[in-house]
Image (cartoon, rainbow, N blue to C red; front, side, top):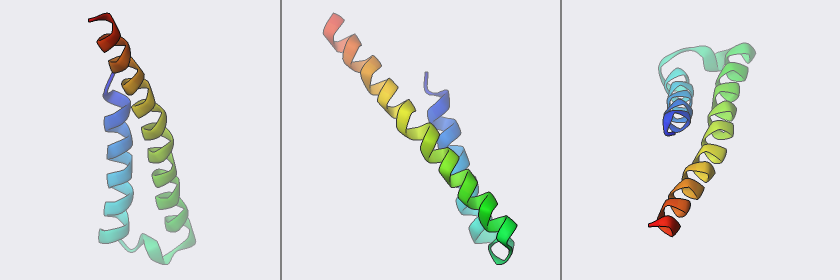
Length: 63
C-alpha cells in the first residue's frame, strides 16, 4: 500500500538531486526532465496519501 508513496518520494528526490548535482539546469531539455519528474512525484504523492488516509480511517472505524 505504501509503494506509491515511496515512488513519489524517489521521483521528487531524483528531480532535486538532478537539479543540484548536474548541469541539466542549463539546457531546456534538462529543465523539462526535472519539471516532469517533479510533476510525476506530486501526481503520485497526493492521491496515494489520500488513499492511505482513507484506508486508515476505515481500519479505525472497524476496530
